[in-house]
Image (cartoon, rainbow, N blue to C red; front, side):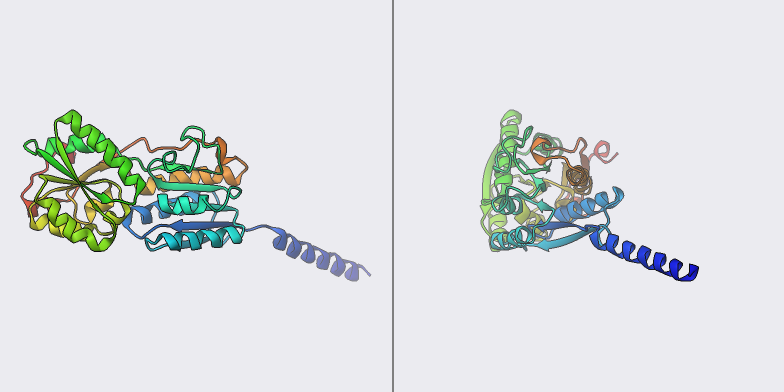
Length: 314
């Protein structure tokens, strides 16, 4: 009788464990990334690592569905619709067009964003300090004024800065305006050169090399993805390219003073964890990285005959 009772109890415990395992919810997180390039890739990796450090591990208690839109706005909408229809618990949107696509389709699912320069002007939040929507996250606003000061320090004889960016990226227009304001204060002239698709990059860069002493490109997704081509043309013309972020420098640009996208991703993950634990995005101000780093490409410097001051390399 005792053996039978023990077997019954054991069976009941096993059923209870199985039932509990079935009832334990696996959190679904949809990730939509606009395009592949080093900054956005690092942003995503930092996000995943940050979640894991907080105890949210993909394949264990969360399921991450990563989707890349390959730079196509139509793909952003399709991916966003997939996440909304699937009733994901949280959506992580990397870059402004990706974030806008998701925010236009749901006002209920919490959305965390990153690699978005100014969420307020992108109409993703009511204000950066008080989002008031289902959207919050981190901004990748770079120190545009400091980057123009870098131009002045590296090239004191330079008179004109060529602003190279994609005409359809709101985040780039926002940064270029800040850079131009800094140029006005520093006594630098500037000329704009825009592309609407990647096929125009080579020709537009070539033309800009004839008009400017230094080329500047902010954290523009299209230019970042096409940076090897920009660098090739610029190096052939012995023109330096000051970039918005480190990945663009590694791809052939000369230098930058900018943020670390991996750390930005980890910071975004901390916000996502707070949301998963019950905090509302509407009450969470947009966050910014406190530190920036100087990065230079010594091979590019050698190719165009530029010496990077020793005090910057410390």
